[in-house]
Length: 177
Length: 204
Image 1 (cartoon, chains in turn cyan, purple):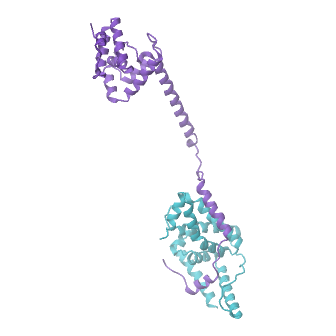
Image 2 (cartoon, each protein chain N blue to C red):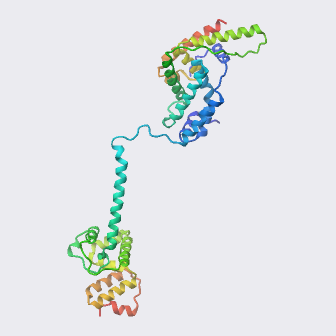
Image 3 (tube, each protein chain N blue to C red):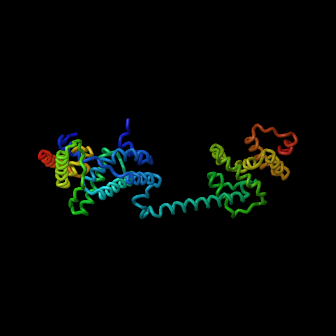
């Protein structure tokens, strides 16, 4: 049975570097995608991703498992993202070129799938920052409404409202396909 | 957990891909995490105000105390009053044992006869071991004159103490010799005094 995140973080706090490695490998992908899809620039995402983990490392001695580690991690991520958005004036960056996966050998269908995915990506990108963040925290990080509220410093009602708006807009984008 | 997911939206979101950070970035972060646990963080709030000088002052106080104790012990080692056979003044009976010792330790009282340093050191050493026994300390506080005589016995081996008592006899200080002999018997109840020595230490 795998050790829970909170236990690993406490072990790291007490000097166990291997515990951090396990924790990192467990969360690196999801956190990276959360950041990447928030900023849509790989270079910026890598920079922010690294800074978030450095903050986790620096904050280890103050860590206390009052909530799920995931909530704590994404709270740190949220704060770092807010700093980033403030500096950028909340502007959205260009959508990176994506190579969507597809099994169909039919070039027409491939193109259609690619366009559908691009529309979805654009819809995601077009979401207001708070709604996109709520969606990514729910969809990518697996946070509940209450945890989203905790991580973003809002209340449950606001978090739920943001998430519902985001899902409704994305759903509309999917149904247009 | 309330799941607000829409299956179609979720599926489409997954199709965006599963990007991961580059391995170089992973290595850098993991190296930083290992370095961090090797070097503990400095306190977030450095000591200020009273705490800034608290530790140096405490260290200075400890050093001063250590020096004072050392000087005090050295003075005691050189003070022959601890091994002398003089009777204490009457007011010493009213003092507690530590107060009497402190007064005797004052260098203002010159020794009647200079004592060999080794014997004085022996006296201090023996006195230290006696101080470690609480019952001995209480008894000596109650009987100050006997305590001084007792120190004679404590200061030396039984043989040396007997020699000292014999010397008192030769000098005609029989009262002091009697007290010293009584103290000797109390301190060494199972010591068998040789016949020849017995003649020297007992009152003729």
